[in-house]
Amino acid sequence: MDIAAPENLELLGNIFAAKRVPVELIQKIPEYRDFHRPDFSSVRDTVKADVELQDFDFYFDYVVEKLAALKALWEK
Image 1: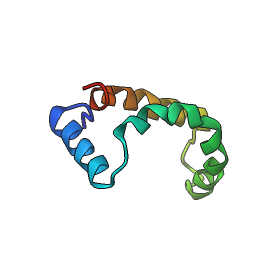
Image 2: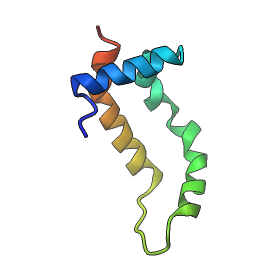
Image 3: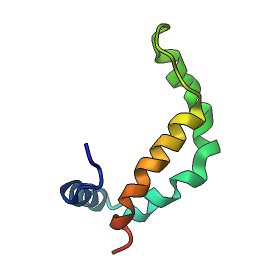
């Protein structure tokens, strides 16, 4: 799925608008790495033993990279 496709950007913009949340908050997510880090233990606890799990930073960096594609939402 291409989250930066025009129809997906429109959908995300509409979702944020419906919830009355500024879409610009997405760009602040990288600032909250340490805030989310403690919750990763609950993720670790739910993963099957045979699944190779990466560390928190791996997944956080992945999400931040994907969110960069949404920049068009707040740079209109």
